[in-house]
Image: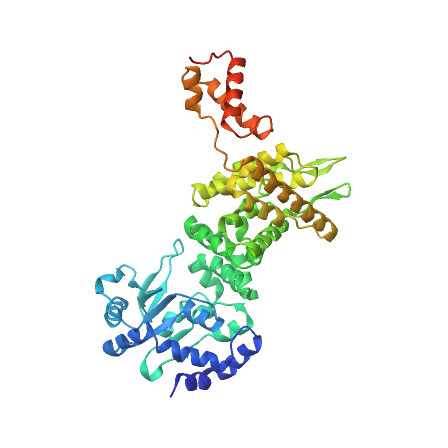
Amino acid sequence: MSVKEKLEQEYHPQLLELEQVGNYKSLESRFSELEKILNSEPFVGIRKAVKKLDQPAYIVGGYVRDFLLQRPCKDIDFVIEGSGLDFAKESARSLHLPVKSVNTFANFGTAAFRYRDYELEFVGARKESYREDSRNPSVEAATIAEDQLRRDFTINALAIDLRENELGKIVDPFDGISDLQKGIIKTPTDPNITFSDDPLRMLRAIRFASQLNFNLTAEVFDAIKHNVERIRIISQERITTELNKILGSPKPSVGFKLLFKTGLLQEIFPEMAALHGVESINGKKHKDNFYHTLEVIDNICVETDNLWLRWSALLHDIAKPKTKRFHPKQGWTFHGHEDLGAKMVPKIFKRMRLPLDRKMKYVQKLVALHLRPIALTKEEATDSAIRRLLFDAGEDLEDLLTLCRADITSKNEGRVKRYLENYTKVERKLKTVEEKDRIRNMQPPISGEEIMEHFKIGPSREVGIIKNAIKDAILDGEITNEREEAWQFMIAKGKELGLESGK
């Protein structure tokens, strides 16, 4: 019996419904593609290992899910009823790879190796039991059915049989295909047990909902709310990995709204949760900065997949709760939130175990500067203000402007249109001034060493004063960004400070 016939016999009614959703290719093409895939590498090599070792083996989890969703996936997990380590070595031989290319992790009973652009991982079928204070389970050998029972979600419990007499059969004990069709995240067993055993699965549920634009079932949603404090036993690194994946999804607001509504956000990212809410005094109220931030992130995602620009959008207003003030005449203000927000970035990155290198500094810079272009749209921008923005933003100017455009979330279409038109004018002026003055990434025309050499002085306060004065004079248009003018300016500034020119 062909793969196509087996699939039609086993799952025709469900797959017919899948086709009607509109996100899938025709049934015929799905059957044909699966048969084609199983007759190509690396699966042909894996099937040889199945036959030689006479061990049942299955493709499981994400690869099967993504195959049905037509999402690209280069990570393939295999479950073997038997030793995953021995099977991985035999698979490598069948694929004409040296056995030493197999990385084994005996403590976990897993093995992995790379084949072309695929990452292949092998593990023996297992069942698990958990202690209350840890997400690391005790494991023992099991059947494929028991292994599927321990999986986090029904859509990740799907398996494809690789035995010749069952080749291509989709093993779906929990109606995962039906849940794919419905677009829901559901657990194979009681979600309270699933999440209590391994609380990271709560974040994974929300991450998959965000990546796939799926819904959580009511039972899953309620179980996350009930078990939310269990997230405290999960390491920060694993939490941050899931946050990054939510932030990297096509529409991150889906995930962050679920994080907030379930209470997880309050546990793992209280600064962001604090953005939520609207206060009103004397009929004056401010916008909800939580939902505004989510709009900005979604706007950014339309433009770029740059994770750190997305983090900049996430944190651009993070200090508003701490800077919020009410004035009877002005209403609500958030003065200085950009500067305080920039100071908060390193602390948040450190706690989140995010990189503290140039990526953090990039986010910090964009948070600090995100109001500058907006200010230039509200008035006639002077060349001096333009030069300073060019200098301060440097090579990140385009990303800053992308963030600022994304920051326009008013429901007033006329206001949005005016802002965007003004941005276009500012961008033209930025380009004109840069072409004329070459300010971006400007290197001082006079170095500190040259200042010390000319005035015959060592490192001192005066050197810093002169360097900053030269920079400010260029940015303010007092002198051009040319060495000769800067040199004469240096001599004059040194004289003001009582320094004598060297002979």
